[in-house]
Image 1 (cartoon, rainbow, N blue to C red):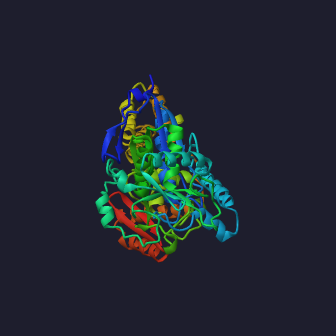
Image 2: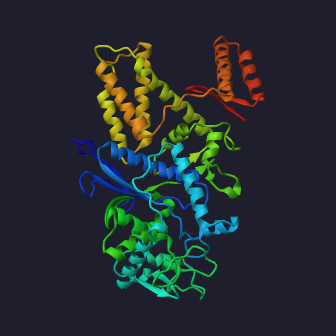
Image 3: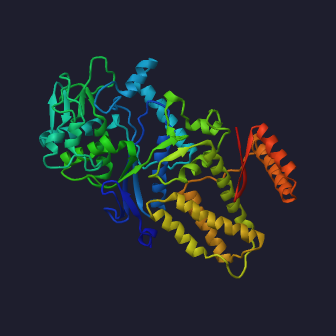
Length: 493
């Protein structure tokens, strides 16, 4: 019996705003589409976090025995500089600035994207289609929407008629926005736009003479609108209705809203049963932005070559850090957070490494079967990785107790522990058991810990002069001690 028959998943559906029991359209099969990157620059950490969330979901669904077709696209054309169908194509602009071909830009940053995801130990999707590889499909969808009276052509460009669509369907059903409010908050057209209404969006844009990326169509030589590609590729590979559509919270409106409208206009039905959105990543409490310097690239985490971090971190440490927050929560990326995650990651790996050396007994003082189900319960509750990680640490504590002789484990339970850690740490969370590297930073930590212990002994002996001297001289060296009920920790300036 496949595991999915005994494990019931609840998914927070952005469409309903509630957790719903997951029931795929076809028993045992899952179709999942996730909006991929626009490949005009190095993939940023916020993208990585979103893709990581769906990598874990993909891994867990596969573990439960579902046959999953996971489609994640590459946007290599049609994504203009803003959502008002204005400005240059982002890839074409990069090509113009660097005096190279647009497909050179696409190739460079697609390779970068794959390299970064490989370092983070992502599984590849089942299919990774490109926008430029599906121009014909996009043109056919536009023809259908025009035939259904929900799009119009002006001067070689084709626009989706949002107002006409909204007469029978609800534009804004996903983002919970009303068309009346959108109209009220939108500036009037300046007379130079071909659109009937500002809320209408492009399905096809006529290319200006200088526009490099262009294809022939019944309306003009031009290029497809950004929203259209995902409708074309998701329906081609997953069908007119499929199970899960994922992406970042920033794509909910207008991108995903437009996808729903396009699919309804073309196929007459809502395309997706469960809409899932990963929340944003901030840094040091502020929005990440190159313009302010509050920014870090994934490779800079691995090299330590960024002023916002004090050392290099292994990819699995960074992955562990990101998975300690639920995918629907805002995650604040900080050096202190990474340092804490690094300690936790290696503490977990140390416990796993002890498993082969534990002595077994006739019985266990820890209910391993119940603990294993708690691991499943965490993932079944909208893929709650932070609860899963906390549950894994419960067993790590038990492992250390067995090692110290204060707890016992049976041979059967020890085998179940090993299997469960393999499943959830490596197969589901996608972590890699990397060795802790010795570095100057590690040696500093070890030296400070020695001084912390000496200070603790001095305080126990009521030698407060020595205790204060250790604290003050460390402070002069840029090392701040912080006392709490859990013990003493330190930070460096």
